[in-house]
Length: 193
Image 1 (cartoon, one colour):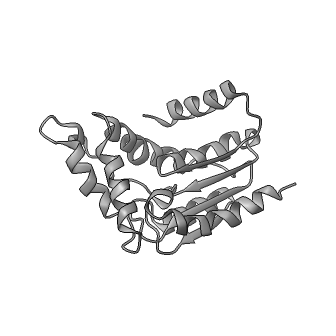
Image 2 (cartoon, rainbow, N blue to C red):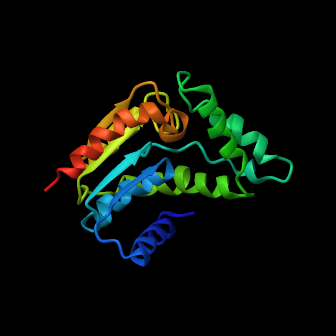
């Protein structure tokens, strides 16, 4: 997965649906590509919301995650479990981990290649967002830290919100708490002129 390929997929999907100037929101690697789309193609969007998308996301790519001797279904659960807040409901954390156990061979490796290798090389060259931008990052996210999200928001001219008591998976690890953070943002977007 590369930035160029990812952007082509997202833009083509929107064109196929015939949607004009949608609000785009993505989390993690989708949060990163949302930053890119806001800066490079922002005139195509009414607003952009980047969740857990920042500039300093290196370190998550490890080549052996797709090795035949590594059972990704078991390994990935432990690899991502520390990215969740200890306050998140246990049932929601387990569901999030179960989702990671379901990935096909090489999917996580391709995702982390984009997020941790390709993206950091592209992120620093972005200009200001061409649409209203919000960047939300969970306080317990060490993959994309609040400082990383804050840096991205500042560089792109967006608004930054640190989400207390949330980790890297806001909408799945603690959806009730996430709604408290995202509702005011959506309200602001509804009232944009």
